[in-house]
Amino acid sequence: MKRIGIVGGTGYTGAELLRLLLAHPEAEVVTITSRAEQGREVAELYPNLRGITSLRFDRPDEAPLADCDLVFFATPNGVAMKQVPGLLAQGVRVIDLAADFRLHDANQWAEWYGQPHHCPELLDFAVYGLPEVNRQLIQEAQLVANPGCYPTAVQLALLPLIKHKLVDLQSLIADTKSGVSGAGRGANVGTLLCETSENFKAYGVAGHRHLPEIVQGLAQAGQVDIQQVALTFVPHLTPMIRGIHATCYGKLSVAGTNLQELFEQHYIHEPFVDVMPASSHPETRSVKGSNLCRIAVHQPLQKDTVVVLSVIDNLVKGAAGQAVQNMNIMLGFPEQLGLQVTAVLP
Image (cartoon, rainbow, N blue to C red):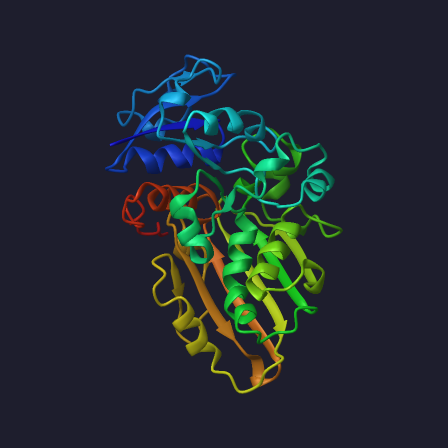
């Protein structure tokens, strides 16, 4: 049994992480932190955990994090980078669910996140935690940067095409939609029920923080410089709680490829990527509560445009579930342990 700590347990991601870990047969959550809720029972804040755990929230500076085998950070951007170096020095392995270690370039990080990076020397040390790409590196990693939700859905949709050099890297489009939980649990007028219900809107069109993360991953997959990848990325807010739907477009540069077979073979050994039959249209509700990414590939009218549909639960495969998947890989557990959860319908 491994001792696990969670820093930042009051947000949706932290709560989802705790839900998954409490059902994990090899993980014991020994501490979960919150400054605002110090001393309060976790089940008071999240009644779905009543009778499941007696944990109370600890203050971050009083929590026994150094005694843990692995610590998750489910904190706002900019928090983990101030505490992670000390934990690494004490031999604790870390998975950060925020963006602190996702980008390799400290200047680029500061530009997109509006603050200087506290420990830029760790940016190349951290392993980007997309198991379908970096499984071997994750096994030995001390620090894993858990991918963002949009980047997970988009990269899994486009990676087979880019790895096999089948699309023009200068004409990629990702048209994405997310449920409101992606905005977090903090009070915000824009995410009130009356603002989001029966409404649909784009945001971040001029530039979204997940864009450089996606481009970095696609460039690495194609083994090209970042400047060679041009992606138009447009996120939208939808009137649902969970789920991401990414519709990704590319111009085929090679004709005659059986795209269905290509995707099936690329992901044949991936436990959490489901390539659906030809002509399928995956639905967000089909992955709700699960760690699955469901993908369908289309070539409309057999012309030179490829369309890939990708759906995930933004709180699971897009955050907490993928973090547990990374933990399993790091600690030598079966990758699917604690994550064999069937999606919730209706």
